[in-house]
Image (cartoon, rainbow, N blue to C red; front, side, top):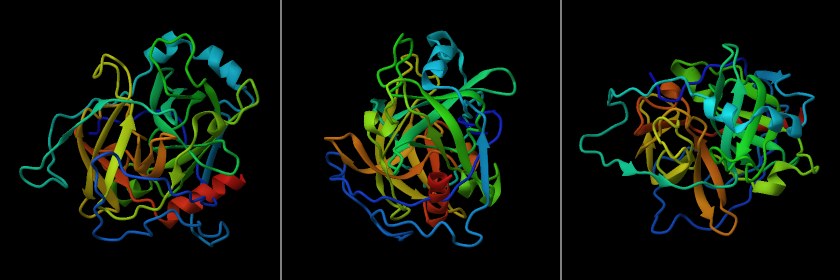
Length: 326
């Protein structure tokens, strides 16, 4: 069982145009390591959204549709946010999948980024849930990226740069209007290779688009199974009492038998599903190229120190393009 699975309503799908802005350098002291190529090493134009049979769209609306970000902000009080749970307890069992003997596991440290935050929603079980999501660059400047297994619910809101207990969030609370997932996604087997989704958020009370406030990461094809990447996410408060974001940099590797990467670092408990894998971080903007997210097999990994990510290839760009145009 995975640490990060979340129980909620339905999900969505799409297809969209990729925008490629290469950002500057890797994290300090990092070195790129590329072996087996999976796609181009820089963000490239996405395939045409009309490609036949590329994706089976599944779109969920009615989450906060028609509700302004101001209304959703009023609903999500600090108490409601604090009551949200990831629902899926972390397994302490090591499966060994993707791990070599004597593998070094990195240590995470407290750190957040404006473009990364928490998705909150009310599930069909009448409980509040959450996971991690991030802003991705798009023509409408209104797109976020999350894991498909973080299924959308009512009163869905995105809180970038979330601060636990704050009366006012530093970058606001944004109403999620629709979510797009690939119908090929499932919680088991090869369907976990599609564990990603996009969502559109409405403008805030001042008429601003979210990307203009937080900045956005560039959706990028995964260059290789082997990358130096930074992962930022929000673990459940019971595992991290400070209830704040963590970041870790480490090399990724291939998950045998799947189109997925593994990432070894401690501290990625429930709630971190959807945390973006970033490369070429630009320290001026605190954004980078997003080449993966915590998701995939075992709802993102078998324990709190082993995380998985689907490979970003043509399929995610078809979904991205669909989301842009719908």
